Image (cartoon, rainbow, N blue to C red):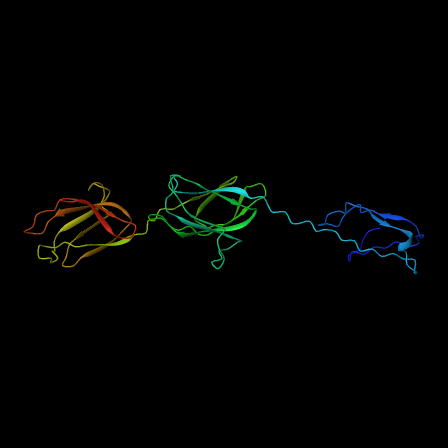
Length: 261
């Protein structure tokens, strides 16, 4: 006999005798009985029937085996980046109200290995290091064999997987910064008539990226982060030409003078 959807089964036309009930196959998700169930003649009631309640133990769900997943955050040259703050959340989106399953700050020349059970996760960058752009959230699936499948990423982001390794290549922050140049005399007044050129790099060579003649107010330029040379082509009447100045435009928009007389 086989139990129905309610767990019931019956058999009729049995004589008042000894019988043995043995479970051959247990319902899905339950342990099979290990002991036979005996029925004796004196258990038959006046209506010649016997009722037995049999309970199977439920099989506890198996905990998925965690997989070692390697995360790499690299620059365009493939070198591990220092200082990116990353978090991983369960599911296909970031849930700030829920605790992340992992969070860490990247270290130079070091990958991060995290144990994750098979499933879908979303990685988010909460802080990008100086000089690099934020990456969009990356949704990925850890498969049963430990491999990774990318579900969603930024259209311009470089995110690749090789087996159990997920690698994100950061883009450099080339956002121009507003830099103000002021040409003044000893009294702090702006000087008109200086012919000025700005070159990319630590020498005033090649083609200037910007050039202008000073007037009685500061000059503002938008320059990408990097090293530049300030070169005065000609000084105003009554003034000497200044020596070339090498300076650096930082990612936070500040300027550092590297070489000046």
